[in-house]
Image (cartoon, rainbow over all chains, first blue to last red; front, side, top):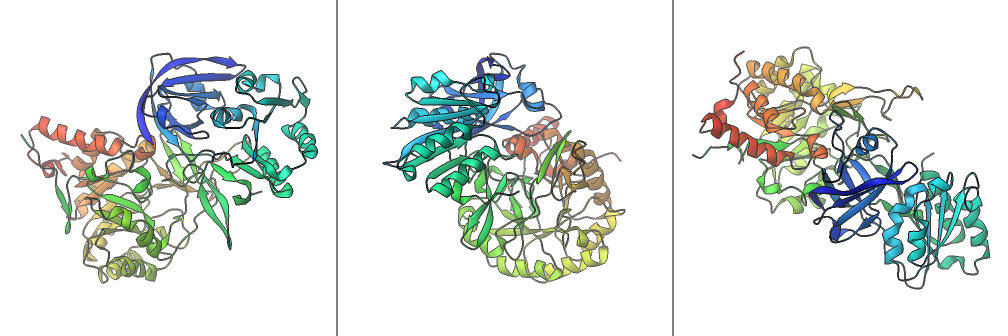
Length: 260
Length: 304
């Protein structure tokens, strides 16, 4: 974990409301593992004091990039970032995804731009497989070619049927799962909205496979100090709070006690 | 020329007057990768009760203009857990550790001190009498001078180490609490805890925090804290650790001019973990620029 004054080297519209921000960050970049995130201090957000967390999309020795969507005050202020601007970042944060278990069949599952958090996993994975991406419309399914180039078989699903299977990501995943002779050999790496995470987690428990879920919870410090982003993690005799930022953000489906 | 930044709070020697506010810095390891802990005047750890405590439901924090609300509810490992889990980490550092202590009942304050006092790593106790987010304790003792005094006297009877009550901001006469702290044998006073506050979502009509209300911290509360430090400085000779919205060296200097001998950086740690170090360096530069030989020279120099 490092704090670094990164420099914007690329920033543009990617697709629809989605934007890509690439940062020159030679201290943070080389440390990144798949599924980790960074905390960015958004410039020109004067009266708002907290950093904003972002999944790391790509990273190398020179820096890291994130894929974001304008969803609120922080991301709206980020739109005005120009190439050459300085951005204070802390990262990489969190534990990220574990390595693929030997002998397991990797499956990527993402909702919307959650697949940004899976790109490095897709790249690192020694075995390639199937990637199920869900989104509202075709505009919300990103980076298909990038995953295909790495050797993944991408199966999109959209709510309106404008791309791939019509319906939620489960509409394409479930029939495929039903065809698998050895469901227990699946190892899922999942990132997306909470209902999707829970849906995949429930299937993992019911059918006896592994699902690593990257949990999304409002966050403040990002380093484990403020205890904002806690979720309930099962223990032998009940549950305990676990910090998404420090103990996660990735948890195995069986660890999570879902709150209604 | 060199400037003396060292200060003393009772028997605790700090190499500079800057610590971190309880609850904003974990127990030390959380920020060890980002902050040179040995440079801090002291580390003040998150509140420790006698037993492990689970804390509040989520959402626990909410960002507001110029600050944030929090209602974390003092989750923590308890005194035994702190000794097992964090003392071994903190021990090798050359920095005093102030343990913030809290209790649901009065006896708890004595109990937690009894459990911690043999630890050399524990340099001082900050007594949390002002947590706005825990029903049973905290502010119940901090807003009534009689029970406030009884907690101070109880803790005083259990330890030779410096004790530093942390005052609630929402009292009508904070000077009376400062006086009670002094009479009870306290070594210093921390001012202030976060200010009781609330935010409501106008779509769902629900409070933004699961606890409904919380404590406001950050730049928004700084002028409140400055006034309280000034009030308390007039009421007692005890050293004051001032906190509330310190983001820049200038903020810290303002607290010292108002009457604080030391300061704590709180919410700013979340914004920029390098704040405390920047504040230390900035205070030193200011003293050099103004021709002071010691940081003590500026304490309470406000012309008011």
